[in-house]
Length: 125
Image 1 (cartoon, one colour):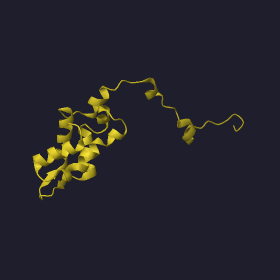
Image 2 (cartoon, rainbow, N blue to C red):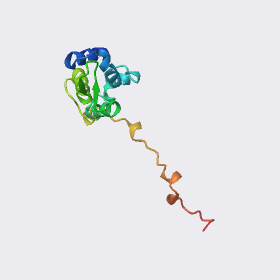
Image 3 (cartoon, helix red, strand yellow):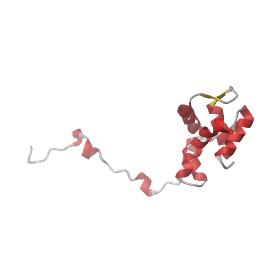
Image 4 (cartoon, helix red, strand yellow):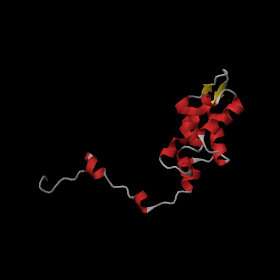
């Protein structure tokens, strides 16, 4: 599936109401297209934890225009399945990311910020 509006139409067909009832949830999933405009944007939210994040942002349920209460998690699962065919874990995405040398170059800052790491200079002793 391509556009979040089409996901919203699919939700309306499945649970009733209008596409506008669901649009904000599907837009949330695809906001990462602002970072990278190809399929890789999905690594940010298109996984099991992303579905639970959707629920934290929007609540456990939404009430659509017909008055029906729809679980947000089901809407998130629908979105991810329509895009990927299944619901991966975040670990599934990470396994596909090739590690680059710059990713592991953390700088040791503890000597600069931890007062217990400070050493006494010979002049002060």
